[in-house]
Structures are given as structure tokens and as C-alpha cells.
Image (spheres, helix red, strand yellow):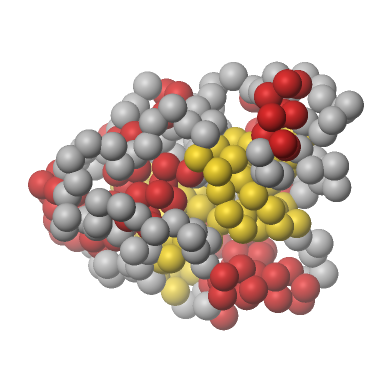
Length: 270
């Protein structure tokens, strides 16, 4: 893994990627952030050594380098998911590359099902903490000390100063952001009513199929993390309705303009 990361970093540097201030994973809700970016380099995943290719509808497959709000950023447009059949090491590989390009900061976004009765479809939630409920941890196996310590402290998973800053940005823009705990599962099935109840009873506000492995690996490398989740469906007690991937995409698309507006100002004052 160490050699693969260094090979990929070297390739990207030769293509014009220099030290970014922030690494950003564009999941559902932030897919159009590249539209407001001053793009310096764009490379399809299939051209990048050791990268996989996203197979999920709605997830593009490009790595960008450029500037947003005066900050240098590397953007992963389309993530890899465990349910696609990739290993956890494959899923989190781009995060390791971002770190060794030179950034210590990771921003992630995703779509999730809301189990908090105060949430509605289209709400945007700041992720304050996470629960890993996947079948596998991305740090299983022999630890590479050059990445980080064997046992990772996760008590401050999402950076509190960044959370406070985003809350101020939302207030400035008169946007009512939610805040809560995200629970990650493997997918690709949506949750049963009983599983939604379980998620709620475990103390989470939303449930989704990504993000948790990426953030674990980022914390393994001592990166600061911040996350936003757009609520695309509901699993509230007594109100569980059927949902499709297409409906999730539509709900996420509707939130893109607001998510991007928040992120542009957020980056400007970080």
C-alpha cells in the first residue's frame, strides 16, 4: 500500500498536482462543486495508477486540482463504495493519496436516510460524529507505521472548530442546518423498518453507505475531518416509505446549489 500511494502521488505531481490545502470527497449533494472551481488539472480515474473506477450512477470518476475561494483543493468527484466489491483499502486509497500530496484536512459529503423525527427530505446535516456499522474496518491487517499508529484515537473524529465555522456560515446565509450522528453500513440494500429502528436506538440521526471508512483512514493519518450529509429519504418511526436510488439522486441534486454555496463561503474563511 505504501509503495502504491507513493507511485500515485508521484504521477499526480508530475501532472501538475501541488500541495493542496484541503482534500474534498464529492458525494451526493456536492457533485457540482467543481463548477465553481478554477480547475488546473482534471484526470479521469482510469488514467490514474492504482485508482479504481466508480460504478455507481450519479458518481463521476475524476480527480481535480485547482482553487476554490482562494484555497488549493484536490477533489475526488465520485467515491468508491465497499458494496461495489472493492476492498476497504481500495475505497480509502484516494484519502491516503490526498494526505501524501500534502493536505492535513479532509471534507466529505454524502446522502443519507434520516431517522431523526425532526429531519425532512432535503435537510443538510453537519456530521458531528459517526458510528461504524460496516462488516469490515479499513485498518484491519498489518499496520504501516508510516501512515499512522496501530490504534487510532477517534474521540474527536470531526473537527469542532470547523463545525462551529460552518454553523456561522449557515447563519450568515440564513440556512437551517441540522447536526447529528451518521451511521455507516455496507449497503447496497436500503434499510428495513426494523433496521431504521435499530439505527435510531443506537443513537444515530442518519444512516448511509459511505464516509465512515474514509474518515477512519483520515484519522489514522492524523487529518482533520469535516462532513456534510444531505437527507434524501426518511426512516422515521411510523413513516418509513419505499425508496429508490433514483429518488435519492433527485433529492441530492435538489440540495446541490445550497451545499455548494455553503462550501464556497466555508472555504473562503477557513
